[in-house]
Length: 109
Image (tube, rainbow, N blue to C red):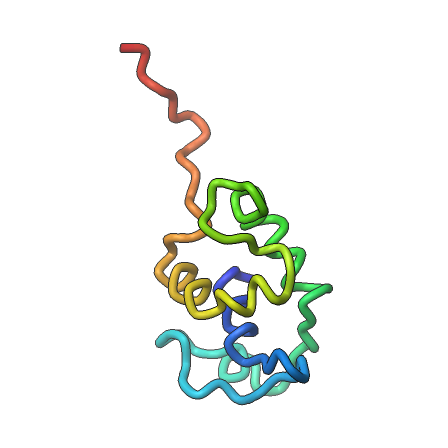
């Protein structure tokens, strides 16, 4: 699951009920999983099961209290409050920051 997909989940969740709501417009021009796999049921996505794991693996190194990122992404409330920015940055592939190739080294000069 890509980070952008997790951001899309946040855009479609109502924080008061935690239930998925229809997304007003698509996040990108890419085909949705429903269009690609119309006969397979969509899995039930929860913050604590799928999304939190994604944030832990790809975001929380920097996005935590006292981290170098401008806001934490530790709780559902953190992620929901920043959902639009999460979607925009992951769709533009600016976040998470992509690492240089493993054989890339720093200059000694």
